[in-house]
Length: 232
Image 1 (cartoon, rainbow, N blue to C red):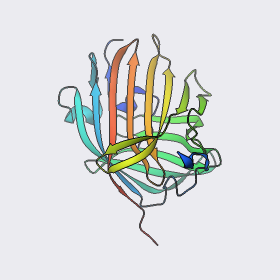
Image 2: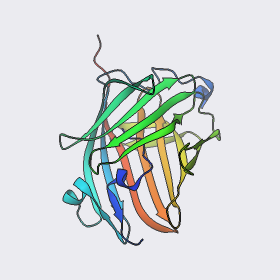
Image 3: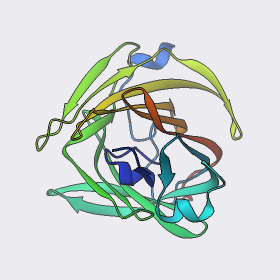
């Protein structure tokens, strides 16, 4: 499981050119964060013309494509900014690839920080971003503004839809986030769509990054297996 950070290095690339349940609140059992919970995803990365992979992705890429498996699991808790967050570690080929921190609060699922080990990037989200709202009502929107830069994003909850992945068929709630990332030239535009299923988490991610209409990268993650935390 991976919420997308706001720096190009987080993606392991370098640019060379310059329903009835919708009104119930989001509860702990809706987004499983118990220690030992595990998700296995198929990860596919594609880069556009003038872009190449960096870090570990460069080693395993076939042309402009990387196909691999990502295994994420809830590993424990850490304190960030005086608050407790659940740590989710993701592994590729048995090697730690990235870590994300989350908390379920009265404001929804909150994400304060992400760290990428494949390309050495770390992003602190200040203030922490809201990934999921408590109600997830269709067409609900919220915005995020980085306190240290002009980076902004707007998230919109879309209408529920049926989705089929390797792990099964689900009724999912798509949540789409549009982000503008300032650069010295044209801003980078990033679109992240995450399909959320209550009790499981995200069954699919899709990320597309462009600059001035030029494709930088297109990533997809689809759920292959979900394992609940061991009882007791």
